[in-house]
Length: 266
Image (cartoon, rainbow, N blue to C red; front, side, top):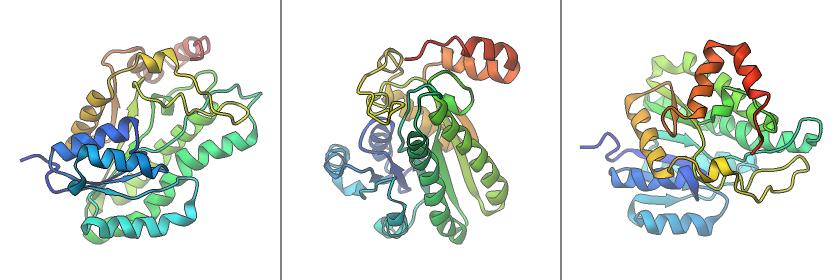
């Protein structure tokens, strides 16, 4: 029997990309899945494709924190409890620091960081009460390194690592697990929806993302990391430039800086 059989998993950003692929993979393994994103029509499409009986649609805008408390209550009652919370929704960013408006930094932090920690704060009492739970945080390789044109995005992802590493030290006695996932280039629409320095949509699929690792295979890698209770896991193409970048930063930070500062923006 699958590790995920009859478990309830709540996924944000489930209308496309990694979240959508995880939904299909989890349903195939017998899980019950709550899917959230802004676009209800896309969530309904995913629900029908995955199997309506096992999937509960819960629209959620990560820029509307005043709706989070009600959303958490609704998620818990959907199937009676939540076993795993997958923080996956987010927005990417492209722009030089000198050109990026403060409002863009705030928007990226609101979606990619503050929404995660507020939903975590609201769901944590449920996990503490049942003395089990698992927060899965879809971060990025940019949560471990820095390159040109990504300052706001990298800042939000670095912040996630700090916050959830601290939370892990506080909740391990309560059987609450935390897994930080650091994807490399995955073939999704993430760069299409990235915000530019002025706050407009990029509306361009970068060559690295367009040629990225298969999203279905990525979902399977994430599920294996969850099942094994990994604290942190890179996912994506094995031995890729992104994989090497993480190890270079850890082992030879000065050399890493010299490499990253000449990275060509995508």
